[in-house]
Length: 113
Image (cartoon, rainbow, N blue to C red; front, side, top):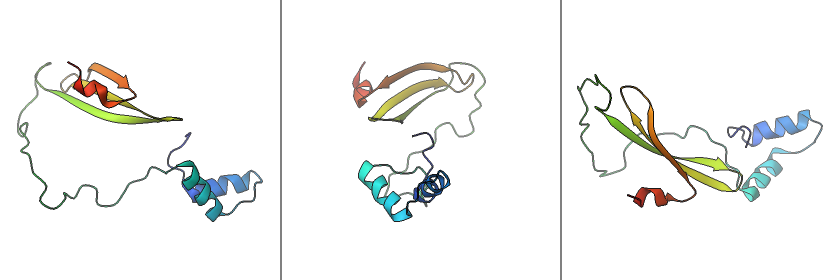
């Protein structure tokens, strides 16, 4: 959890440097058993699926010149030792300030008024 980009090769190298003789296949098996997956850039993520609906970009050409003119929201998850937490934030585009945020262990915040 200290560095989520570590894969089996890098974990093997670190353990070998610390005097623990271990093979990469064993590290891969242990990572699989524990559910550890490295975070890395996956190929071709920005290519739309077949027949995916396309939505117009309504802010194209618009100048954001004052606060409270354009807001945006983002939902992401944060990996924890026992699962993950969801974080939702509402931000102002002009000032780039976070107007509101909520942290939850479920997606229930999406349905609250």
